[in-house]
Length: 427
Ligand code: ADP
Image 1 (cartoon, rainbow, N blue to C red):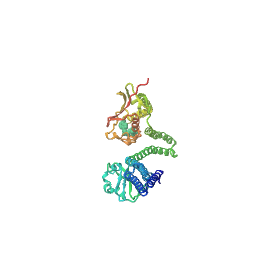
Image 2 (cartoon, rainbow, N blue to C red):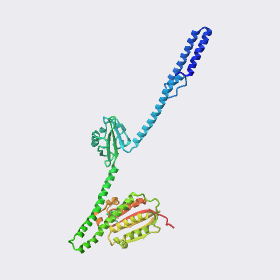
Image 3 (tube, helix red, strand yellow):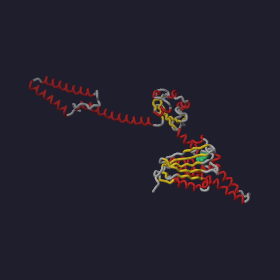
Image 4 (spheres, helix red, strand yellow):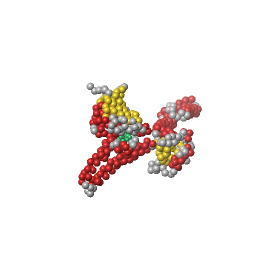
């Protein structure tokens, strides 16, 4: 579109040529000169646009409106596209960062099975390098199961994933899934399922152990109940059997109590505001709970230092004391003493339980605090153990920022000790 400025310029040029031409009688020449001048001006404008076109993202120089329009429209489109490209690039960069940071491995394959791209996790999990890009995945990963998995037709979330041993650490298990992409290629996702598998095994073992522990006393109760219900037996005999039910019922009760306590210790956060507690009072309470049971009242020898105040939770510390003292009494002869001591050193209060009992062989020490782990299953059961005592002790100590120490000699006895942060005696 011509603007007023351009029409005005044409008018001024033509008018000047007309006036000069008529007054000097050289109208032809003046009109010719005016036309030349107009061509010159247009050529100048054209050169400016040409110069601008070499750097089109710069704003075009101001000029005659029709020429400025020619340059300005593409310039604006270019700026808009440049902004869009920048946004798309930054989004793409974010996605790439996410892919790189993803702990799961990702490999993109062409439709011919060549590696098109892969993230850091995939590089580590499959022991690949960036230089493998462009090579066929089945030639660089030498796991036959994996190679077969890539070439099989099935894909997507519905198809079974492949579980295979990690090349980095054969004890670790990886899981691969594959998905088709639009260009006929594949995306392979790989995740480390070692922890998940371990968790499943722990859960399965735990359920198997609990069922097993419950089954024994239940079978005993069932046996007695059948005899009690048998009307062919004399009534006095049937009545006498009811007293036999106490032991398996107590066993079931202990097991359920220990399980609930352990679950509670494992699944709840430790209290933040632990208070100052007199450890000797906690031990006295524990001994009271044990009472005449296992002859705790006659066999325990107490030796307490002064100021046994610790920072902790009384009920949890009491469970700890009950379990350690019970074990000491349980795994030693009735005529040997169990020594309890509380001493203070460098702001730490040490609680020690020592027995002169059966002792523990060194190879068991690492596993004693596992749930249901026993050195001798039958012996532990006959002595009334649930296999959860030391697991409870371990969790109580974890919640008190402490740990269990064991010194033991087979046939000579064991010493279990732990330390707590000392607290000032409340005034
Ligand atoms: P349990 O209920 O069977 O005693 P624990 O978790 O308390 O289970 O202990 C695990 C195992 O550690 C026991 O079965 C026993 O073999 C061994 N143990 C624990 N305390 C002692 C001890 N004072 N002396 C000898 N063995 C012990």
